[in-house]
Image (cartoon, rainbow, N blue to C red):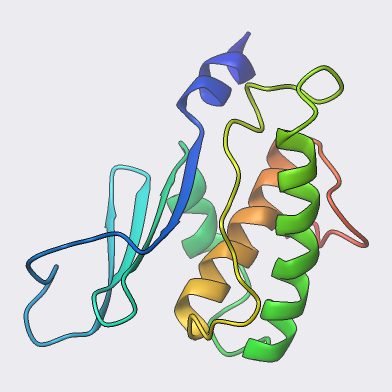
Length: 144
């Protein structure tokens, strides 16, 4: 029952081509805002936005995730391709996978360089998700 409450709050949204008329924080092309277990990454130059809302993710990210720089961007991009592919496959099979866990597809294009921060946060969310909800998307899942 506790998990169903958290599952209902789970939203992950990756939108490419969003239109924002004003910058999130002036003077920076990319920004990360964390507030009340909501992580938002935006890059006005590339026109993308990532929003992760999941109770406990921010705490987990700061306390248990590998530090930035531990993995290369290449490593994170490769893992994210597999994780996102499997995630999107599960979204399209609601009769087989819990639709409360896999609510919407993630629009992740491996031909776009999203930068280190976006790949770092997506990768870590996928690790957090798999460990927290006892799911296995692809390969070995670090238990961090």
